[in-house]
Length: 640
Image: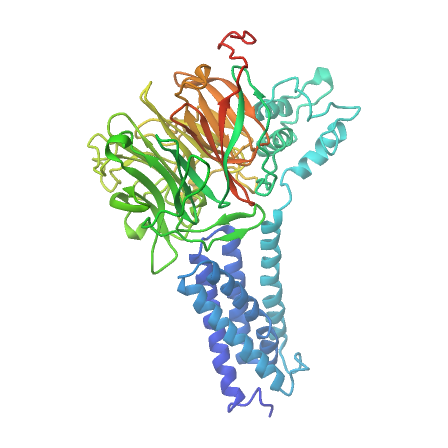
């Protein structure tokens, strides 16, 4: 009798290993299910769970096949568990799983090396055992291949439909052929928006030789092709976020419709992941860095040491393909001055409050003062219940602060559950909401949900995905936000009390896999568009809209009350003219400048930009160009 099949010595060890293999399947599955679930992770969980169970059964049944599988698969599981444990310290489940998998792997290798029939793994194994062995390899192998495909950039889902139906006329790369004009590098004859392009595809132009495609392509295919063409026209890529694209600040005079200006670098060499700036009355600038903390930029551009005593932040995020964006929890987010800062000295911090015993977090708002480089007088303004904390990344959680002129403070809390859709429509949970408080943390009695059972009384609006900008306009008494969608569907919203802004029930964009945003089916919520507040501006394709200001200052008088908006993926700075609750004119002030994380107005009216970049963050400011023109609104080209 071989050592492997013996019930003594190695045989008993085989039973122990088989039991641990079964337990490893349980922990691996639980580990992926509880660590940021997604369709891809759920598939992998099921794959490895089945795989480990099958391997455990084979160890008990025949030994040798189970040993061969056990010498490979638990090693993979151990590496995955170790990677996630290292990048998410404090989570016991991946540590537990990695430890068990590593032990099982070592034990199987040891047993295999000592077994007499390890070189003939298929002998004395039933046909059923062989089938199980093949399935145990194919099932997780397919899952891993699919996951890597998703991670490294899945193919464009609408490319086949375009190539099959459109490329013969417009070219494989949209360059135009004899039968059809180019779709890029020129103005389109029948409109530039995704909606215009989709209409053109749907109804066609028979008089010009273009057929109607509504009967050949379904609505989703038409919308997807239109979005793909629009992204190409804007030079956006679904997977390119310009994290390492060179940050180029123009050195000369930049001409715009109403003001010529220069862009001056204030400071460089910040951490690659800054989040916000708050210009101080004396010319210095507060800057928050996600994984570092809070510091002050002196008037000569020199950064101070980190302010001591601020809430702890964490630099243990993981950079994931294909976007190569950092995902982590426990970050510093917005820093903002109280409107009466010069009298009371209050500084507000919005940050990811991370559980000490785990790797979960949730937005938290505090205020304090800075005295001699120390954070003092701290008070908690808003904090969610501990059971609402989650391991979802802080990357999409909003984190902005805005004050009105009636003593209220507003904060944005984006998607922060264990998925991009769970809990956002639930008024009993804090994420996916804009919250309104008195500036000392009390709940205003006129908040829209204050008398609704089981609703959080601080909620002002809900149905938000990733609100990246938040500003109050004192001239009109209105609150505005910018919000990132998925693939398309970035928004500029007027925030009305008690209204639902739609995520994840609907979006002007598509999900990243090309499917419509219709999570109401999974949530058991019936969509009624009449109850959804529509965006004032739909930004499709997505520029990854970020922070903004409603300009009030003397440096650029013709921009008074205009919206100055930054973008991340598009690396552009926009100016929008408001007329009541409408945007009536849009201008791109600068293109190709870099990922703009924050926009603020300084005390002298200069417009400050905060850039994030892999080589280091920077702060720059827009100042009027000396001796150049200022054109009055409505009279382009008239100089003063």
